Length: 180
Image 1 (tube, rainbow, N blue to C red):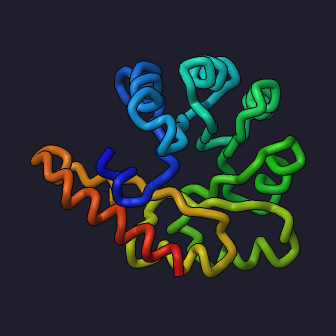
Image 2 (image 1 turned 120 degrees about the vertical axis):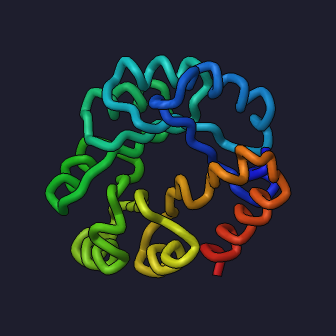
C-alpha cells in the first residue's frame, strides 16, 4: 500500500516469494482498483497460468519462454519475457511479447537501450536489475517504456521497521524521477 500511495501503479510479486499466488490474490483485493498486480520470476507456461488465475494482470520472466508468451496471449495478459542480446530481444518480440525485460540492465547501461531502439524502434523495452534513483531517468531518456525497480524501491529496512511513510516518500521520489 505504501508504494501505491507514493504513485506506483504496477506492482510485481515474484514467484520466488513464499506464498506468491496468495499474495497476488490479496494484493488484488486490497489494491485492485488502484494498482495493476502482476507476477515476476516466471519461467514457464504452467506457472504463468497459475498466476493469471490467481489474478496477475501481467507476467514477467527472466528468460524468454515461447510457451509462456502463448499462455499469456490466451488469457490476454501482457507478457514481459527477459532478454539480454539484440537477437534474444527480437526473437522475444517476434514470439509476441508485449515488452522485453532487459536484465540485468546495469550490466549494459542506458546506452544499450538507445542503441537497440535505433534499428528496432518498435520494440518496447523495460530495464530491470540495478535500477535506482540515480539511473532510472537515464533509462527512460534512452527509450525504455518503463523501468522495474526492486530492492532500491522495496527497501527491506524500511519494511522491517514498518516505516510506511518513508517508503511512500521513496516511491514518490522514484515516480518524480521518471516523470520528467
